[in-house]
Length: 228
Image (cartoon, rainbow, N blue to C red; front, side, top):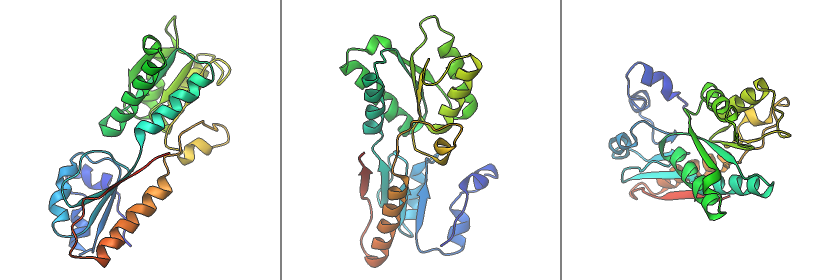
């Protein structure tokens, strides 16, 4: 098994798959959102390829494993509504995952008759971006009583903003993240977050790849979506 950090290759302008192709690997599991998923099509012509954890459309021959982002966002929003919150803000992200989570948040608020209380603040899915967006939100005269962040690292920024503004979490404002990363389990944070079943997504991705090894003549193109 070989592991590579694709971010290092992108900084040098190199195709992230090139070093692995040079090593003549038998198959490839790509984890996370890619700038251009269509580029995997050429690789899939040469070997089995599985994309894990992303929701962008993939070319023919590429298997895909991902969580159900719409259902996850719905669960978060309904959880906050169930706690009595009505003015709820969403710190949105980008890409297909960010879009699915935002749309589901808006749809759920609308179904509960709260569309006029829903606020979406665009972010960049970073801690600093979450901090800046939350400062803007919590400085409003009609500030939200709950914030749903698109991911855990954005949520950390939201927590920092609330603390700086003298607001207690969850007494003054509720804050919820997404992805159940190791950050959420740090003792001084203990985030409420959505478990995106990352371990199961990884296991399925590996299983798809092994299945393709066992049936080399069969083209890929399967999609598996983990529901919560």
